Length: 179
Image (cartoon, rainbow, N blue to C red; front, side, top):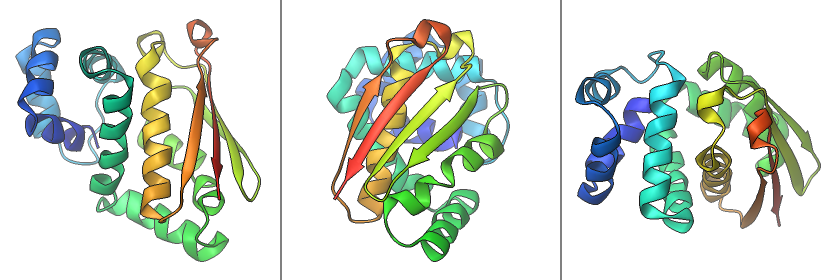
C-alpha cells in the first residue's frame, strides 16, 4: 500500500519535490519498488506523510487520501475487506468500518491499535499507542481522508472530525458521520 502512495506522489511533481527534499533516495526507492503487500518500517512512511502534509496543507492532503482510497480499492486485501463488509453488514460505511480495526492489524506492525465504536450513521475510530514517528498531525488527517474516501467508494456523503489533542501520547480520535 505504501508503494501505491509513492506512485501517486510520483504523478504530482510538486508533491514529489517536497518529499524528495525530506527523504533519502534509497528510502523512496524502496517504497517505490516494494510490492503492494510488502512490510515497510513506519518511520520513513510517517516522514513522507508529514512532509506531504506540511507542503500541501490540510485540504489538499485530505483530498489526496480520499483519492488514495479509490486507488487502493483494487488491492486484493482491501477489496476483500470492503466487499466482505458490504455483503455481511450492508452498504453503509458502518458495515465496512467494522472491518477497519482488523484491516489495520493485518496491514501494519508496531503502529498502535485501532478500534471503532459504530452506530448506523456514526463511528468513533481511535488509534492508540501510535509510535513516536506517527505522533504528528498528518496521522489523524490521513485517517480522515481514507474514511472520506471510503464514503466516496460507497457513494455516501460523510464528514470526519479529527481530535489529535493527545497525539503526543500516541492517541488520535476520528469522529465520522454520514447520511
